[in-house]
Image 1 (spheres, one colour):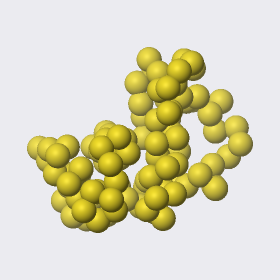
Image 2 (tube, one colour):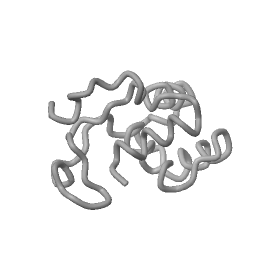
Image 3 (spheres, rainbow, N blue to C red):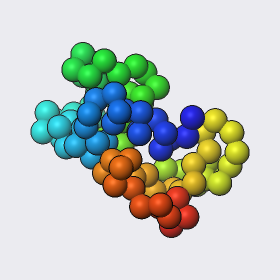
Length: 102
């Protein structure tokens, strides 16, 4: 599953876009330096019933933003993504050419 597919599944499960979840994490103080991934994962599990894989995708977005390492871009396989920039504003609003942009 690509990183973007994880985020799309998070949106489907929670009803919130990744950007909305990241904003809630920010409001709760979970995006501050020094916050451990386990704290964020516990919140996502308790409030949204997200498992570890989907939770870790959100941990990345919350702590590092929308950019991912280029090593996975354009690669075949389970973790290959089309772009090094993730779309955080919801699958329905993603432009058709988003993956070819970055």
